[in-house]
Amino acid sequence: MTILIKIDPDAIETDKLRQAADIITGGGLVAFPTETVYGLGANAFDSKALEKIFKAKGRPQDNPLILHISEFEDIRRLTNEIPQMARKLSAAFWPGPMTLVMKKSDSVPYTATAGLDTVAIRMPSHPVAAALIRLAGVPVAAPSANISGAPSPTNADHVLYDLDGRIDAVVDSGSTNVGLESTVIDITGDRPVILRPGAVTREQIEELTAGLIEVASESASAGRSSGTPRSPGVKYRHYSPKASLMIIEGEPDRAAEAAAGIASKFMTAGKKTAVMATDETLDTYGGIPGVYSMGARSNPSIIAANIFSLLRKLDNFGYEVIIAESVEDKGLGAAIMNRMNKASGYNIIKA
Ligand code: TXA
Ligand code: MG
Image (cartoon, rainbow, N blue to C red; front, side, top):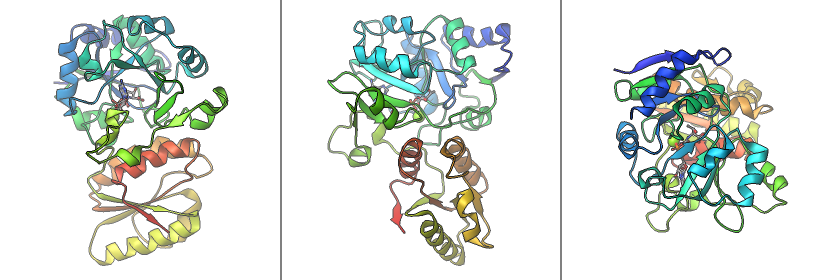
């Protein structure tokens, strides 16, 4: 049985939330909202509880977890060396959608880091996440609260769809804000390296570090057996809907025309086909059925907040094929396209 605990983020009832914190300190699993996506939380110092996370999600053993803290000083429980870059980045972006990879201390179990000597740390800004971590009194390990490989959950219904009966509780505080997982930055080397793009953008980090930033090439290592990716998570199939997903790259009007043509062909061939379009291109599709907007290109944060939820919805509607327009690959758009391209298994067509 999975207990549902409803918490209003604007009026947090501490007594209700304490029930969730007690489950965590007691070695159980609690899904909870963060500003990015829902996480599946456990006591970061409890190896047995961490093993339950891997089991509940069907997560590969070699994919390490992010440990969540509620104040900067908690970092000392997880690492003995706080690099200058950690202070700089955290001053700018914590609490918020950014994860920093640093050297781990002995108190962090290898179950959390999947055997690595580094640890991923994040201080979320969601008031319910922060309150829960504070009440638990321990750093909370939390991957996204989905079955491994599925789109990340942006509300409690998504969590229950994947994990009902497999975890102890879900804290339901409505939909998450950002909709995409945090930016993961490795700061163990000379220069910070973005391992996973997110809402803290490359451009923002470049500005803060005077350009001293690298971006790990994911597509280069994704899906290949040779070469060790720097972030173990990147090599797995991710975010994928059950439908076969195709991404159409190119200037918006041309991409939309190409998407309409391809969608029509699939429909004629008898495939139940959906299109993920944008507000600006909706008109291009005329009367074709199954066209959904991801949001306006002029406001990528809405698209980011919508895409995982839209992918899940289209699956539930039983679509076999999804054709999606790409958006501009910069700023938040880089994170959006990272998830979309991965979800498609790099099934990308240039219009
Ligand atoms: O926004 C988020 O980050 C959400 C919320 C719940 O905080 N969490 C999340 O966790 O997305 P997960 O497990 O789905 O993704 C964690 C990513 C994986 O790509 C993993 O490989 C990487 O972080 N990671 C964790 N520890 C690492 C380490 N020591 N070195 C390199 N990458 C690491
Ligand atoms: Mg995940």
